[in-house]
Amino acid sequence: MSCCPPGAEPYLAADHLDRGTVGEVEGVGYYKVGQGSIGLLLLPDIWGWNGGRTRAIADELSLKGGLAVWIPKLLESYEGGRTVMVSLQLSTWPSDEAR
Image 1: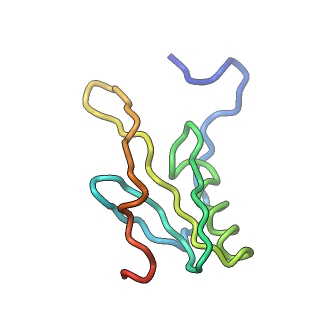
Image 2: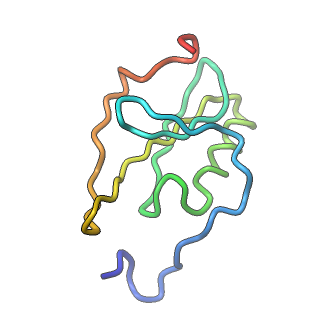
Image 3: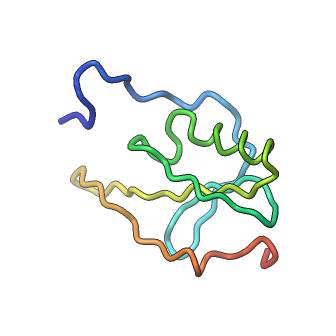
């Protein structure tokens, strides 16, 4: 079963070098790039946090806007091919000052 209608664009592989880092807080993975007092939570599309241009967009927003950009890993795949949404509580994520 496909997620998208016939004729829709397929998965777009990432083709850039990430400028950020991958981490995990309380079992939830994330990609974070940049620093600053202003942050942006960028939610990935159906292809996920490493699909297509998601990280490239985060890198560009961070560079041009002077922002800390976070992309949470919202979907997890489990054995049996089931995909579920991850629960996250942003108030528990570490701040830049805590690192």
